[in-house]
Length: 320
Ligand code: DGY
Image (cartoon, rainbow, N blue to C red; front, side, top):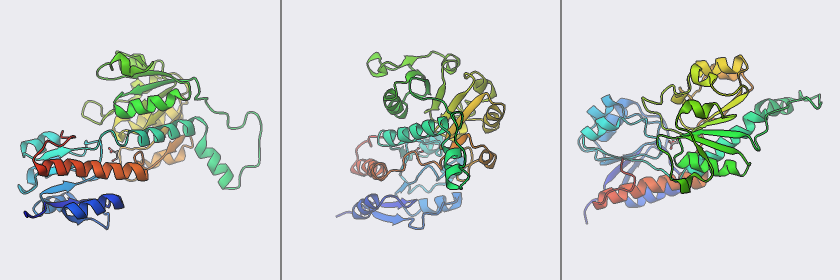
């Protein structure tokens, strides 16, 4: 029997994933779960046939050019692949896959949590009660923005955007979207397509971002676009921090044009933006959109399914 392919699992994935990987592959597992530097990634590439990284491992052009020819496939444990320079990896003949579909509902749940929490002052309310400072109640106390029946704008109507739209329908929201291409009328399910981002922004009481980070979408929500949202709008971002100009967002919140923001991702991760900490109308989470037990198992299994197909000689389902 031929030797099992050697795989480096660059982060501590779910128990079920690691069990399956250890059974089917000659697996080197980063049980310490620390981040790897560019040099460490390059060094590992000489020891393995495949790597399963997360979005935290960066395959820049420089790294791609230095990877050892032994490495044949990068089977990402993420749907986003902005941490991978795809043209450079392709030029090196390295296959790259991702894990779409399986995290859409979990990520849409976090978008819903952020939308509700930002609209109803979750940060401030939790802080008041927790710190023992809740000594007042009045009808004008902590009055927020109602989600039910409000207009929701979605930029990026892919799998996560559509999952979020389905959940938002449960709140009777009026759903609008902008996408590079219009969905089939059958899958729009009552959502209104906008030909331009500007036209979408004008009707978005809540705006939720669900597009990938690319050179074209970096800084998508800049000062000019934030100003095009209706006064009192709320911005939700569960996609990538790079989509938002964070300084412009702070200004739009400080001058009161935006009522609040709900953010699960930041330009700098881990860590986030320290300037956001002073604003109780920013509801923040540490990039946990896909962090449920079921979804993390599904992501791990999807990455392994892609590896299995590749080493069987088939085309992996999620080959990019
Ligand atoms: C993804 O899959 O892209 C999520 O951001 C988590 O990594």
